[in-house]
Image 1 (cartoon, helix red, strand yellow):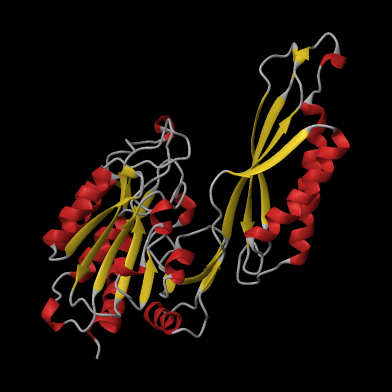
Image 2 (tube, helix red, strand yellow; image 1 turned 120 degrees about the horizontal axis):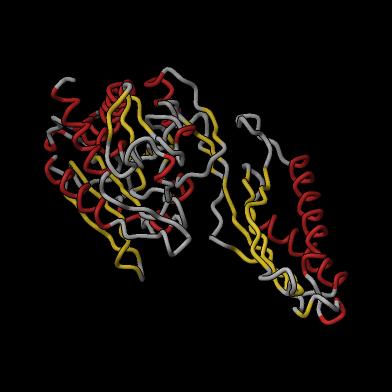
Length: 386
């Protein structure tokens, strides 16, 4: 392995081995302070000025903004999230919290999604003379992308000083992505009355209403799939997934309460407020028909679908640099939050989303140098050109 690649792998190792699981489950959720400290050290060593920005109301979570070059408008943001999903260590063939190299790949939690991107972004900045830069280069590390997207939600325009463009290094196989689905996660809660199962009249069993709830959601799923379509996406319609059920406590008690958790993947043109209002009306009708309390609430704040125009400067440059036309993906990203700050935004990074959130997550070594080359080219266009 060449010395330069060894240094990149060493940086990836330090980031992967810094624990930073993010989850809506408090039993799993953790601070990202260890990876922020590691990334700060790497950025400062590379000559960046680093600011660590705690999230409001939570000193255990923080964003990182690192800048190289002049404090002017314009420039490029290379962005990633610092957190990972929970994991099942017993299903891995190596320790997920240690970086392991085998079979031409780097294995470890966050290796593809997406801690390695920070190391590759820093490698792409190597050798830059800040005095020769015409616009700044930013490294942005956010908190809680895998749960609430709280880090991206709390970004302010002054954090990145009016940069022109942002590239989010989610694993796309180095293909530029200019469109992705949004996501909303909801809970439908049913409240009846518990009682002794020997006499059904003593209570009101909410499980009896479950088929009607599932039918309502299934009919709505079919309806929105017919109303909305996006040809750029591999799954071109919005989807609604039944995720999990919680309720009841004993076979000999009437089930007095239950919650169904589900998500909706939004395509451009379908707004989360439309879904909420249309479902609320149907749920109210069901509640009246069944004589039980039915309520819908958000599990997380919704994330809009994202679309960058095909003819934007960033879309055109990314197509030139990668040799690939911009595509769409079915998963949600932090792109809409950066776009709202006025940045042209794309998703483009090494690795495959197919191995993310999976045992034996990995980044192929063959992706490292091509990614660095792509990022060097983007830096040249945005930070060094007059």
